[in-house]
Image 1: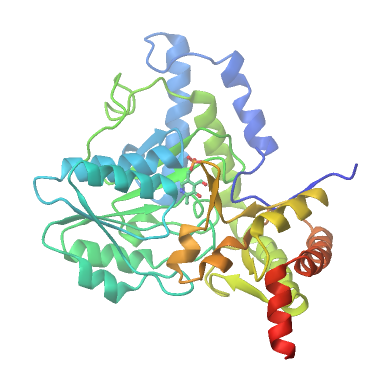
Image 2: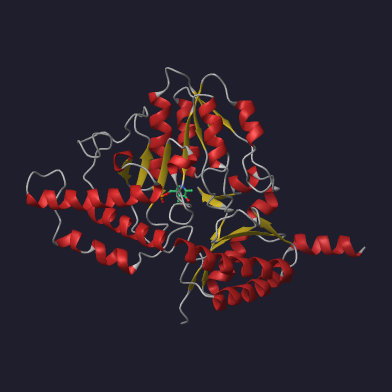
Amino acid sequence: MKKPIYFDHAATTPVCEEAFNEMKPYFTEIFGNPNSQHVFGREAVKAVDEARDKIASYINCKPSELYFTSGGTEGDNWALRGCARALKSKGKHLIISPIEHAAMITTAKALEKEGFEVSFMKVDSEGRVDLEHLQSIIREDTTFIGCMMANNEVGTIEPIKEIAKIAHEHNAVCFTDAVQAAGVLKIDVKDLGVDLMSMSSHKIYGPKGVGALYIRNGLLIESILTGGHQERMKRGGTTNVPGIVGFAKAFEIANRDLEKNFKYVSSLRDRFIDRVLNEVPFVKLNGPRENRLPANADFSFKYIEGESILFSLDLAGIAVSSGSACSSGSLEPSHVLLALGLPEGLAHGSIRFSFGKHNTIEEVDYAVDVIKSAVERLREMSPLFKKEEVIKNV
Ligand code: PLP
């Protein structure tokens, strides 16, 4: 069988060889617990300190402002829950974008049950936050404003610097989820002015189950993982030394090759988008043409369920992702596409293609050819499409 083609890098990436090799000794030889008061412990501390220094330098923060986590989900939970609870004597109003990852949306919903009030800033039809609307919903009691740096589904890059400025003018803290952006876009947390930022290793060719949260020095935040004294008493749990070492190496490589990867991956994306728009009828590109993640192309195919295209592509050996979330047996339309104003039908028919540095132009061209024939075949079976055709031809 031909090797399958992977176009789902926004979901996860393979661990790069450099990161894998760097991690290996930390499973078997340098296996100490950084909390231990002996040579094994000291070796582990050294590795974690070095990793922290490296990652801090890539995002321009102090090492003391970086806390290792189990990934983006924990970082998002910690930022939102930890700030909301720590600042509740000032106010209980929180603002997030409606296109945040589930790690933010579900945490916000849980906080509503604790008596917090959550408002959503509006986004335009390409997913960009409406800053005027944000200004209009901030209140005296708003303590937290959270918006992702780049959307995982439609790739929109958000105006984080402007959002942070607005937040600070109103004495609120500003958080950004940079899970899809860190290691892909150049990030300087001081220049952006954010107070907190979450990152994840497995989106940038690092191992799964590890990430980091930047917390500006002096910021009030509660811990959510209480336990031992790890991470300067802020986050309990035995330190994931190999994971952290692998994350730092993957970040180093991503940072070193950032411009080269951006150029290459966005050239694949652009060829793909151009060909699909020109050669497949009744498609909608979701998200903007400019100012979008280099790897991301998200399309809605009118008159077809996203899942049917996903299965056709899977049969042809192409791995992609559907925008819909399959929850408890029922297929929900994507909350991101609904927030962009897409009708439910189109929000159901979306497919996310996310390219990576190992993909080739031949793979992109093959995928377009497969999509063209799959879409044609599926539309022939679609009663909706047939009805539209009949109406058009009357
Ligand atoms: N935030 C965004 C924007 C994401 O895309 C993801 C993962 O898909 C997460 C958070 C969760 O990150 P993790 O898988 O590291 O928990």
